[in-house]
Image (cartoon, rainbow, N blue to C red; front, top):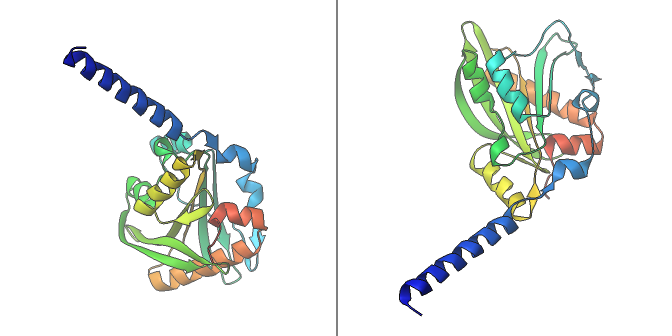
Length: 228
């Protein structure tokens, strides 16, 4: 057989092998389908500890164009403002997506706030003592005119909380290699304050109280499973 024919056969075999490998590694099991239905509105309590929903104040609202993008990414969203007995307020925003594959990545607060005219700075990775384990979080400081808003947020991919960026992508890849399409959460808490340190401490108190008031299944959806 002539050499060009052998080359053609070899190329054809390589192409078939590549196609077969791609098919084998394509995730097919959706975690969202296996975990059952839930509603954020019912899952997150409206009152817990010294906190209750304050219906007079709404969290940051996005413009219609940004909202249209979010509607494509997420299956459910929840936005509330809570107030405690001292009159301090925390804004809570949660977004859930049933498919955290490459085409359904989370929409980070850095993007949302910037789109609303905020200057976002001081992006720092950290950890929040949740009372159940150390939760990897990112902290931001957003400013628009006289409004100063310290922000704490985290992302869950499947059953694990992770920092956005490389750690998030690695977690998605681990699920993908196991044939699973993970679901995901983005949870954001923020407050209006020029004292970022005091605001982050208050946000941690709020998160701890909220998680303590939730049952194990709901809590795992929100923060994943802690190791060790």
